Length: 511
Image (cartoon, rainbow, N blue to C red; front, side, top):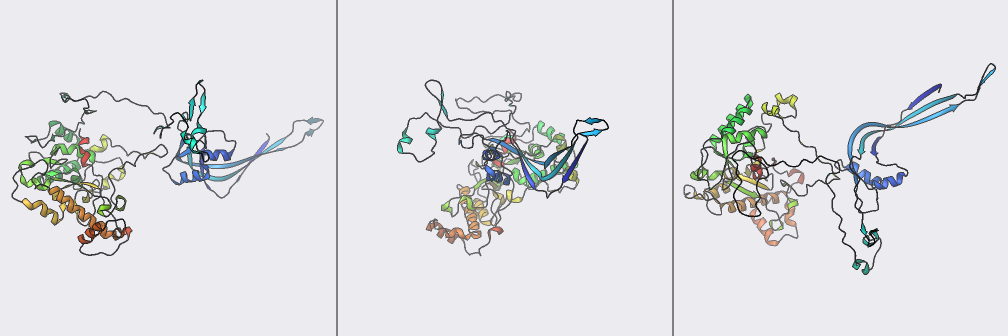
């Protein structure tokens, strides 16, 4: 080649999507059918949480798809033309050069810019075929017997067939991973398994976490007066700066003013990293497992079972009642559940990225790995929760459908009157009702449910016009409200904000 030239022709840039197809494409139309067609690819591209599915047998309903992950990229689609111009023989003096001369010319054109690519990295070596083994050992296809391709007569549904139940899902993983078997549980020195008879005993599957919290049940006679030495050492080793010392003093003042706290209530009053709070709480208080103060932290040396004034610190498990008999259904209240069984990630969806882990160096400085450059300018309430996470108010909905409130945090006068009915006459502390009268918790829940129902009705009066609602429920709702409010738009109706309520699972952080 004696000469070559390249010509770059610029055209209006178009955004394109690249699919790295795992096969040799001979017919683009058939290739698109394996991806669900152009409409199927467009629907997947419109939802970033979806993975692109490829069916090697598009007409087979039992075909197991291969999934492609979505990745951002920076690439261009070029159209390259290679033009060769040949020339004849050349005469030089008495000699004739037989070798022809050729000139190669390259022309390139940018067709578009690729910002998204779908890459198939999963396994495709397992499929589920509708076959059966015949008497002679040969495999027989069952598709014509189990698939309805046209309207069939009654005899089709009564024919004798082997049981064929395909699995609803093969696996949640389609990439090879290393599986590490759980090692043998290593318990602390001096640990002895419980001596309980029974064949269905379920014990601890792992050793306790080294947070050194003290657990007290309602039946225990004595309460601890000081923390474990290991808890003291853990916190002293972690308390390395002025911020930690300040938080320690703030938490001590809170327990001096109020001897019983929930962890969420402390999170709303003190700004401290959650991992540090796990070490600071066992240094300040012990944890009640059962009784009217269950799932609460109690100051060392304070026994709520012997102090009638501890009645206001008892816990109340309140759950928003849903159903047509209450005037609204679950979908008609703007309060989300803490967890849902529908949050199940399938292989065709992209798993959310895990939150960044906190290392020991970050905890020593009281900082998280996020936004470290601006840590000096971080606000004092960085880790604080909203007070709606532990305080009940008549004019605001709870942030979750199940809440754990302390009686002193029910900021409604009518509720406090129910609690103070036996004020000064408390005699016996029971495990179910504590220092309150019997059925006090039930009356509080009924009153709070009426307040929630009234609030929902005032914000969404259209609920009362439902024809499916019983007449007696409508009369009850009408009687509960003394005045009618003007109808408001749904955009103005926002539930109380809060954070994750983990009181019922808090013990898992320490055992």
